[in-house]
Image (cartoon, rainbow, N blue to C red; front, side, top):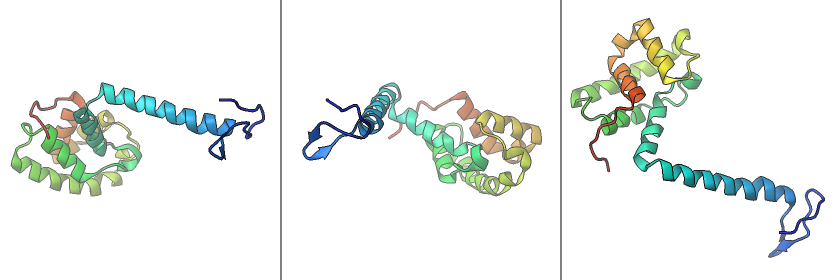
Length: 153
């Protein structure tokens, strides 16, 4: 493509709309770079791995549990750890998560955490791992990446 040296000007027009140098670098090249990175990620990680990571984010204590989603956490336990949580435990997990969601943001020790490993240590040190034993169990499983070999849809 031919571009003029003046910023914001074009010496070429495609179908009536000018393309500026700034637009080319800020939009066209940026979009191409993002597309390339997405293709690279897709080739390295399968759908199941991406779903696992997406659902795992729901446990994150970052930004005072901003991404905490009870339904996603229950889906994580059900889909990726069906052998580790029986039906009764999955039912109880939901209630533990509801209490946890109300309880944890109130405790100053848990407000500045940003990783699951920090959360795991904090639960153990505070004794809350006994109160929220199913959540603690799920966090341990996620941290060790023990994923069931059961096939998923």
